[in-house]
Structure formats: structure tokens, C-alpha cells
Amino acid sequence: MKDYGLYFHIPFCKSKCRYCGFYSILHNEETEYAYINAILREIKTYKGLSIDTIYIGGGTPSTLKLQNMKVLLEAIYENFVINLKEFTVEMNPESVTEDMLKLLKDYGVDRISLGIQSLFDHVLCLLGRVHSSFQARRAIEMILNYGLELNSDIIYDIPTANHDFTLNTLEILTNYPIKHISAYNYSFDTDFLSEYKNTDAETFFNDVIDFLYSRGFLQYEISNFAKNGKGSKHNTKYWKMQDYIGFGISAHSMMNGEDARIRWCNKGTVEEYIKEQYIIEKYEVPIAECFIEDVVFGIRMVDGVNIESLKSKYGSEVVEDFMKKIVFLKDENFICYERGCLCLTRKGQLYLDSVQQYFWDLFYS
Image (cartoon, rainbow, N blue to C red; front, side, top):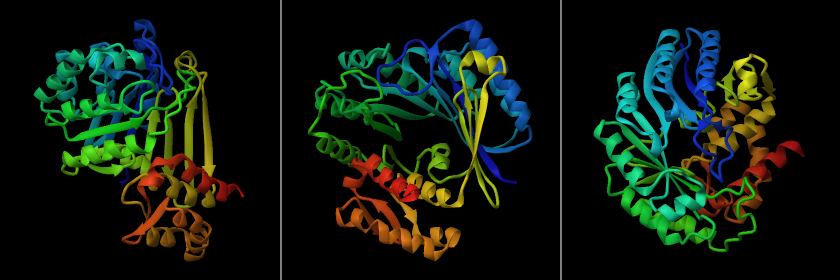
């Protein structure tokens, strides 16, 4: 039986962070109750699937009332065949409580992804975060005391913030027994300080990678670093084009069939999702597009995309024709070939969006 990954989108937040591009709304207890019931309704349509990874994200899942979180966790175990390799829940420092951690651990959660972003209050204020450095450190200690694996999210290259604060944040974090850190470059998805231009982006990017490497964190994906092989099993499904099902509004899903790959997304608002008036937008991915998807997502991994695997799946002629068309990227040191794999160089990682767009342009041309 094939194992799937499950993703649950909990869109509630106490406030909207200035940099965030994910779908979220301000927390409301009445809406929360109705939304969880709507997720239970959707869960039943996939009853009996075998599951090996679960990820509850958002938004801020830890804003849920304990009873509503418990109802969701019980529904997961009641409706799916569970062969868990990893169970992650996202939390923000201000909403980490002993009661929530105990509940999560009791239901098999073994990994928390904590939205720290920075350990300096003025930087957190700049980002629009509502927690303090003290709350972040307290949350880290609580999570580790429960014996849970911890991923810490941080943001670097923040407009007007001194780069030293990023490195100091990493210095503090790596003194804890944490085995996973996600480091994201600040994104201009909003108008916040959109005129800011940074000419030191490459230096900052390399500084983060080099510092984490010096502390034993190996980069396994463009924004993710792990010790002792503790990479995210669930997120790796996205990059390796493995099957996953998303629940809740704005959640995406993907299933590979023998002859086709199907993607779908729950489009609409929370209110429409609750009232069952949302749209399930489905798309059958053509085989040529599947090839580009495999490359575009797979190249995010430091190990890259195995060329022989691509040939086995899509044919030698397709792959060799593609390789001829991307010689420019190799000549300009954006990509390289290592151990039979197509990989990004450091320069290619820095300009990931442009490299991926180059691949897509080949598909559409």
C-alpha cells in the first residue's frame, strides 16, 4: 500500500506578519470550531489511506483551543492507516504552552517547527511578530524538555536590520541541542520596505550557510539545514514529487498515477470552506510538464536530480535534449553535475527563482 503525506492548513493567526504570503486570517474561536468540523468532513473523503508523514501548518496551529486540536488529532487516527515516520506541528513562541505540548506528544507528534525568525526584539518588531525574544527562548526550552525534535525558522537579509543580528541569532540557537534550522531570505511579497535594495545578498547567504556548517548543520535543501540526518521527511515529499494530500482552505495536494500526475487545491475563503462553497481546482499535469516539475522541485535539494532516474522515467532523448538547452546555466556557474546528478551551485542557489524560471521557459517555448 502506498504511503501518503498529510498536510492540514490551520489559517488562524493572532496578527498578520508583514512578510507572510500564506493564507491566514485573524483568530476567532467561533470560526475555529466550524473550520475544524469542516476539515473533519473533508478527512472522511480520504478514509483508509496509509499515512507516513503528517504536517499541521498555517497560520498558527498552536492558536487552536486544546479541545479542537484534540478533535483533529483523534480524527486523523480514526480515519487513516498510520505508519508514522514523522509528525510535525507548527507553533509560534507566544502560543506554546505545557498543555498543548503534552496533548501533541500524547498523540504521536514528534517534531515542532517553531517560528522564531529572530532572537532580537527590535528585529521581531520590524517583522511584525508579536512574540518577544524571551518568549522564543522559553518556548525552545519547553519543547526540548518534552523530548520533541525542534526545527527553528529564522529570516535573514531583513530590510534595515544589521546582518550581525542574524548571525547572533544563529549563535544562540546552535547552543541549544537543536538538530534542524530553516533559514529563509526575506521575501518582498508585500509592500513592506519594497524600495530596499541589498547589494550584499550573496555575502549574507554564504555567511548563513558557512556558519551553520561550522556548527555541524549540513544544508540538504536550499533553505534547510540538519544535523545527524534529521531533515524534514514530510517536506522532502514535496521536493521529490511524492504523494501528499492537503486539508483545509488553500491546501494543495498531489497524487502520482501510472499514467498521470494530478494536482488540486482548495480555493476560496475560510467562510466558503466551512459552508462547502469552495472550489476544488484540479489539474492533470502533462508528461512534459511532469519532467520540468521533477527538475524544478528536485533541484532545490543539495543532492540534486539524478540524471539516470530522469532518463528511466522520461526517456534518454528527452533528458539529453534538455541538457543541451541548459548548457548556458553550466557555463555561467549556476548548475553543475556531481555524482550523476544535476545540482545547483552556490550561485545557482542564490538565484534559484531565475534558474527555475529558465527551466519553465524551456517548457513553454
